[in-house]
Length: 449
Image (cartoon, rainbow, N blue to C red):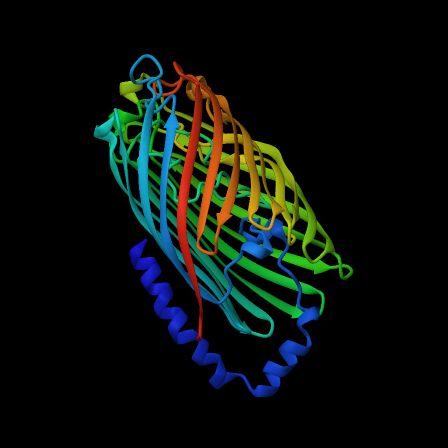
C-alpha cells in the first residue's frame, strides 16, 4: 500500500503538466463549454462506492488534518474463543491527515491515519493501527477519463477506524465481501481498483476496469474456522445514453476468487454478462438495475486436516441487483441489493452472496448530524462439503455527531451485530453490542492560500 500511494503521488505530480503541452487552449474551452454533454459513468459499471457525505461537510481543495480520540465498550470482543462473551473497553488515538484537490481535469483525495488501540482486559490484542485511502480521477482528454482508488487497513478489528463507516454501498456487484466480522484478531485488508472510460460520440461510452482485494489474518489461531482470502477481477462495458436521464448498456466481468483454508488454494472463477439500466432523476438522484447470467467454476484440493475431500463445482445461475442514491445539502444516502457469486470474506471458499446495504446522513441542525448504516448478508459457500459454514450477518449502526466550534466535534454511536456461522470463532457467541464515543480536532487549510 505505501508503494502504491507513492506511485500515485508521483503520477499526480507529473500528469497535470503533461496534457497542457498536448491539448490546445481551444480544447480546454470546448471541454468546459460541453461539460453538460459528457456522459456519466453508470453506477453498475463505475466500480466505485456511492458518496454519502453531506455537501456542507465536504472538504474540497484543502489540506485537512487533526486528531481523533475514541473509546468503545464491546460486550463480545473475543467471539467464541473464551467459551462465553468477554466484554472490554478500548481506547484509540488517531492522528489524521488528508488532501483533497480538484482542477478542471483532476480530482484526487488522499487520507492517512496511523493510530494505536489498547484494551483494558485483553491487552494482548493491543494494536498499532493504520488506515489509508486514495481516490483519483483524471481527464486525459475531453472524452477519456482514468480513475483509480485504494483503501488499506491494518488493525485488530474492523471497528478500529478513526471514523467508523460500515459498508460502502455500491451500484453494481460489490468489489469484496466484508460481511463476516471476526473477533479481535490482527488483520490486514486492502481493496484497490482502476478504470478508464472513453466517450466516443455524444451518447456512447466504452470502458474497462480492474480490481483486487486481500484479507490476511496474521495469527490464524485467533480466528479458527476463518481463512485468508484474495480476489482479482476485470471487466469491460458499453453504455448508451438514450436520453439525458436514461442510460442502458452491457457489462462483461471476470473474477478469480481465492481462499486459503489450511494453506490450500480454493479457487473459484466466474464469468458474468450483465445488462444494466440507470435513470438520473437529477444529477444527484439516481436509480440503477443490473442482471444477467453468471457462470462459476470452483476447484478445491483435498484438505486432509479438515477431513474434506477434493471437489469441483461448476454451473450457471442468475445474478443481479438494484440501487438508489441521493446526495444533497442536508440529506444524503444510498441503498443497494445484489445477488451474485463473491469471495467468502474469510469463509473457506467463495460464496453465493445476497447482500443488502444502506447508508444515510441527515443534518438536523447546522451543528448536529445523524447517521445510520446497516447491512444484511447471506453467505452460501460453494461446495456441499463446506456448506456447514453457511450463515448470515445482520448489522446496524446509528450515530450522532455534534460540532463544537469550528474545529471540534463529538460523536456518539451504537452498533448491533448478529452472525450465524457454524465456525469456532463465531458460533458460540453470535451477538455483539458496541457503544462508542469519539472527540476529534480537525483543521482545514484551503490549497493555494
